[in-house]
Length: 246
Picture 1: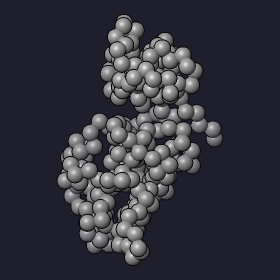
Picture 2: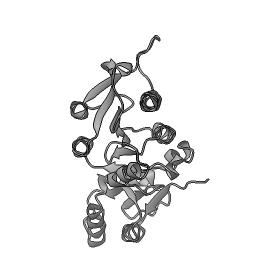
Picture 3: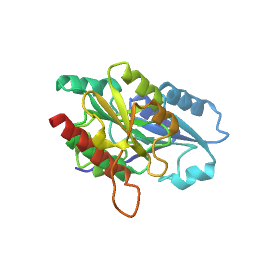
């Protein structure tokens, strides 16, 4: 399957993309552009809760493919995002306790694609990613997922900590991956669960970690002390699978 990465350039094209309901990940606007058509685009972006980046015109020139951006460029997702409710409904339809993977600022598209693939194979009901400081559903992510994006819903939320709090009210509990936690083999990982994985460099952020019920570490015996985010997701996700099977 061939996936297209969408870069939409020019005022009319970007405005039409918003009005047609296309899923926009990010909007780049040249600093100092305050005329009517740009303001209309900005209003549409805010209405759809899209991240707006005001940048120097030279930055737009660098990322433009057509060189006719007219001061505005939008990045559209290769796939449509689901909602958190869609993920919970997916679990309910399968008559299974929810199993959700939450990613805290994963920036590498190959990591995100591999995690979505792992989520599907481990039976997770969906993946949640943040809107800011994280990669979205780009063509690279879609390709790396090896088709899993067709089956595993991905939701994008404004605030990971708040989302965790809301899901706790619906009966989920949360475990995050961190070197300083308890061994994953010593934790009960059954029931409605959210697995939280941090980004490639800094791990899980402090506020998100504080919102988790448990911190799990992966026993390691090599000469280095960290795993790639997608590998760590796989190890912990399949420990959850093992415990659920038992």
